[in-house]
Image (cartoon, rainbow, N blue to C red; front, side, top):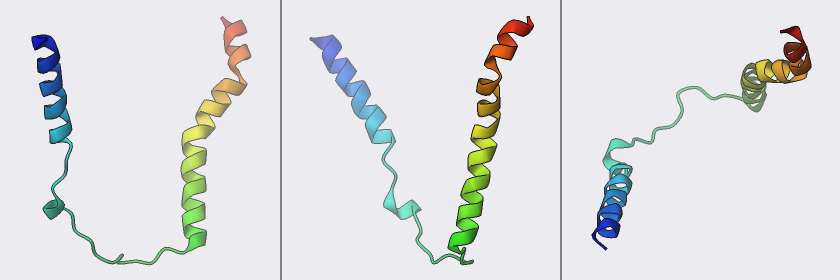
Amino acid sequence: MSGIKSSVNLLRVAVRSQIVSKAALSHKPAKHHISAGEQGIALTVFFITILGPSGYVLAHLEDYKHHS
């Protein structure tokens, strides 16, 4: 029973430390307006940058297996 209590206390401490104080947040209007086209281009670049190399490796996986 004491093991359960100590586990619950550890979980409480972990959850409590993740709460962010509202005083640290600030809400201001954006300094520069970004159009929908610019957002679309940025998302496309991020998508290609992250998924492009992994897609290449997966597409050539058989080549890597037979190369060795």
